[in-house]
Length: 378
Image (tube, rainbow, N blue to C red; front, side, top):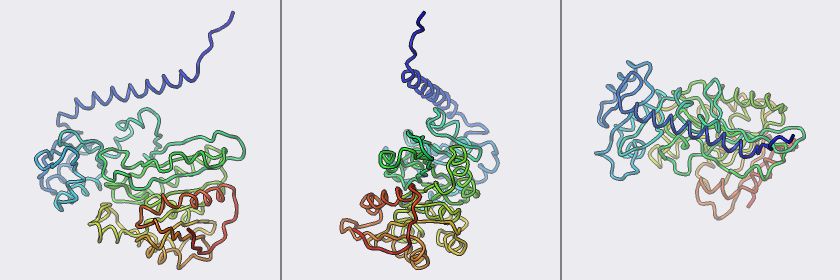
């Protein structure tokens, strides 16, 4: 007797569709429940005084959702509490206060911005419910792409930059999928893990914030646990990121002795605060500034740290990279200064230096020694 052949591809596809359908069903139930104020849900007007809102949050220990009605103030259908806060200092104070209490904007519906508390995201975010994004015991969210080939395993950790649509009213604001095709350009024994960046209005730059004061230790634990589970040796862990992700790649490589490739890392918020009126919502979000965190770190860099930094004198971030890293570590770490004339500002550096980033990523994945120095490249 011949048993019918099972199409595993269809089975996996149907399993994924079932998970997504369950997530959709939960979303519909949630939409109904969100319309009613309770111990876990409140609706507030845009002009609620910040102290009153703070007191309401403090008085409701089980509060998980805040819905802010700003329909009367919205100029367009795409205006959210974040975009409106950019023009209204009082609203910005309320938004940052909610972010510091762990609330993140997750959707915009008909002039209402809906905020979810961090602890509730695992049972709200469709990607987490469907199993496409994993969440650990410390509520660190990550996505793993397992290596397609054999051999001694490597782990490439990719940290997200600021989202392409910086203020998108979606949790994907915290999980930009930079270099989505990177798996094509690294050895087949390389596992790729992406980590989401929560802890602030547009993220915490993977650092400790008022909302997530233990974020740094928890991210380190996630990387260590992933490497242990995959059988990846310490020397075969490589961190990569650009911009905000570059902040993380540089920080964790130097702090924990891993290999790292950082493209134009943001090491100071000064430029964005002074020139763009705090476009990243970093004021009052952290107990210490980036400059203070890195000033502390450079005095105690892990002896095994290996770091490649791609930068450009054409970027407004260069003075901070020069002061914090190049001036201290040009003989220890590798610095590639791109003078590509098409680079006009910070966002150009990452996309116009991909060949240099790939060369460094693959050298680190190969376990090669990376000589220190400062070099000008195209």
